[in-house]
Image (tube, rainbow over all chains, first blue to last red; front, side, top):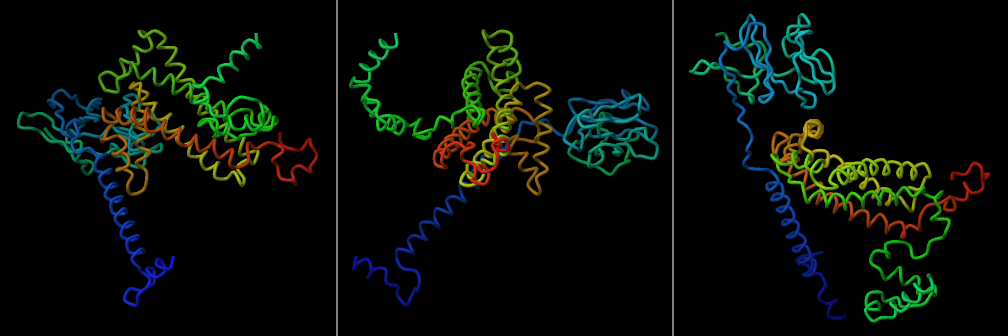
Length: 171
Length: 259
């Protein structure tokens, strides 16, 4: 007991930190660093570095296959290809609310989401740009996607690149 | 017949093997009875001594025990379903159909798993309502209420992860919507969704992650917290009955007392 007391006497050089306290802090500190490192490794491990997901760039075929004033849904690519008087454009078909696949309603001239009832403009209602939301919970309009004509004369859409609305591909 | 049984059971309890497993020993004294509870790893979670009125149906409607019962059914049927189910994108849906139409008793096991899952969610809520309206969450039982809330979350997550496994249209769109809800978390929402799905879409990675969560991580978490939940009942003074009410409640007319 007497020895222990003597050992724990604080010296003037390092007040408040005796040897036992120093090693305790050293141990806790290194365990803290190890825990932080483990958290980083765990995060990195859980984030896949390679994804076998489809390319965002899709080939939508010849422009001639899309009739004037037509809206064509590609279920796999999850986009609408629209051909109107101004030209061609591509619209994401993924609802901006919670990611459901929207549907083209030819009799109403609008795009509607089956999950929670969001409605987006196409040819109707008047005064709304295509993709603009006019009803339901969706927070944003359906984004316009970058579209161009390949050297082979086919419509290519980059689904990862959103563009300002009302930019058309004229063929 | 019961005397015959008791005689053979009595002989069995005297054997060396039995005595090596159950140290309590023979006899019917209170000490022996309490030792039988205390010295068993499963039973020692429970109170050593319980008043008859506490295990009366009116005390709890048995909602917590019934929840544990559905959990037990889910573990057993779930393990059996795992024997025929491959958590891979090309096979998952076909395996689900095989379980329904090809595997002997497969449809029975799958339906039992499904209905028990629904029943478990219902029973968890019923149990919580019962506890809440009885005021059984009050001190000293407040920590056990917190454990109960964690168990509610684990139950809902088990339900949600199991939803994807049939790998049909309903599963796909339900998880698409659900994971998009997760991405509404401020700042790191998209990251949370990415880690949850193991990608940007509900695909093979998401199926495997949900499978591991559903069959391994979440059931283990549930068992861990269930053990604490039961042990806390003992530590917090047993089940909450009419007789555990504060004096103020007990002095009101019997008709106005909660059941």
